[in-house]
Length: 336
Image 1: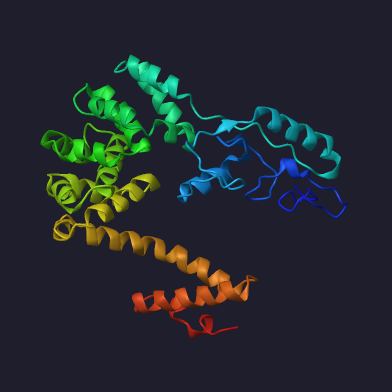
Image 2: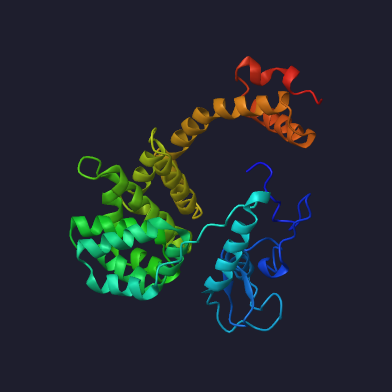
């Protein structure tokens, strides 16, 4: 909001200082979701999660080893921060929202124990859709293995729901082997991808996402098995061709990329029409990209941004020598 306190720095023009114990020791910003680690130190959830995700295994403040990475919400500190924000609202400080906590692992296990009934499976899907935090909680071998069993051979409605959750949670190496190592499962993915008369687009996209997830964590041999399966390449190409569904296009492209990391799959992709489909997709977005770049070159953006836009325009011009006159006009490519 205009005139709000720059909480990242902790000081505004009126001299209002954010108490140091309300700031994250990593980012030095006001904590929005304070959590405590095993050493007793408190950090903002986003900052400590990033710290751990980059491979650090020690507490940033104490440098003591973290025996586990459990993050305990510090509700008392969060309420104090919220009260401080409310007390200084007249100075432009916005109250931090109450963060939504990740799903309880015990709840996930309870819902899994009630499957393959559809109601608990749909609750799992809703939890996975709700947040990245929930998907991280659900990304365990126990959960993925149970979903895999339901996604292949548990009845059409159950299969569709389980496949949708798997598409969001992803696969680890062990689960990828469970897919690629069983011929009937690979064949089922190809069938789901290419059956356009009885399968919804959502079901086809979810099957494509599972193919991409399996290929992304597998070796060349497993990718070759997936790419050689009937219907898989063709189904991914069909997703790329979808005109009104951005997720379908994204899943199709990512799936083709993951499969084509195996050299054996590249001629298969071309034979399935991948090169032509991708060329059409690039051509479709080129006009929009060209317009945005031209606006940047002519607009009031920074000199660095203009130089980058000019460079991209030159690349586009060389890639499409027969492009329209605007793209080829040197008037737009001269440095300012």
